[in-house]
Image 1 (cartoon, rainbow, N blue to C red):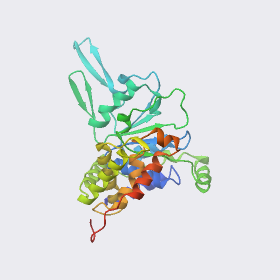
Image 2: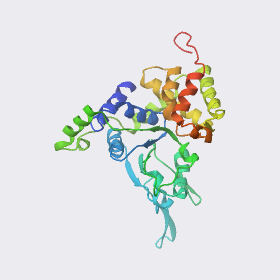
Image 3: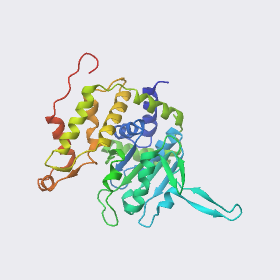
Image 4: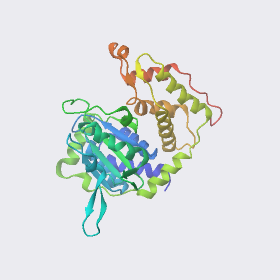
Length: 316
C-alpha cells in the first residue's frame, strides 16, 4: 500500500467518528507526518478528545490522556524517582508522558512551571531526571487542547511552548447536514468502539522519513524566509515568527506535497499551510489590536503582498 492510500485510509477511519471534518483531520495528519505536535483550540463539545482517541486507535499507538489542572505537578507528567528500600537505590517510575500519543487536555489550565516541563519532552523527545536521560518511543505526538473562550483559571501558554506546536487546528461546529448525520450515527452506538487499526508505528515512521525526502528548491526556501522577515517587520505584530517556525512551515509543506502525490514542494503548499503553522506563533502589537486586526488577517495580507516564486517546468 502506498503512502497516499494509507493516509486516505487513516482519514476515512477517523471520519467515521468525527463526521464532516475531513479538512481538519488532514491538517492533524500533516502535523504528524511532519513529526510535530498539534495544538487544538476550540470550544467544548466539538469532539477534540474523541478525535485524538480515534487517531490513536487508527494508528494502533499507545495513548494517554493527561488532564491539566492548576495543581498538576511536573512529576505527575514526567515521572518520579522513588527510593527502593530493598535495593537501597532510587528507581524511576515513568509518568504518563511515556506513550506514543499524549492528549494534553486543557493545557492552558496548569501553571507555567508545569507547562515548561513539557518543553524538553516536546523538543528533544526525552525526559531528564537527575543524571539520567530517558528516550521516548517513536513516534511521539503531543496533542494539546485549549478552550479559547474560557479565561477564568487559565494561564497563557508561553511563547516558547506555543513555538513547539508545529501547527494549530480549529475543529469548529459541524455543518447542519453533518451534525444531523452525527445524531443518527451516535443514536444507538458509539462508533469509536467499532473502528480498528489501519496503520501502526512502523508505517508512521516510514511516512515521516518519506516526507523528509520531498524536494525543496532554493526558491521555496527564500519564499519561507521572506514570509518570516515580513512578520518581523510588520507594524501589526510585536513578535514575528522564529527560525523554528520557518522549519515547521517547511516540514508541514513537505507533508502536504506527499499527501498530494508530489515529490517536491510548490508555493501553494506554503500558502495553504501558513495560517495553521504561523498564526499561533505571532503576537499582535498595540497598533494591530487597536485596528482590530487578527493574526490570521495579518498573515493573509503578507501572503498577498509577497511575490510568489515562479514554476519552471515541473519543479521550481
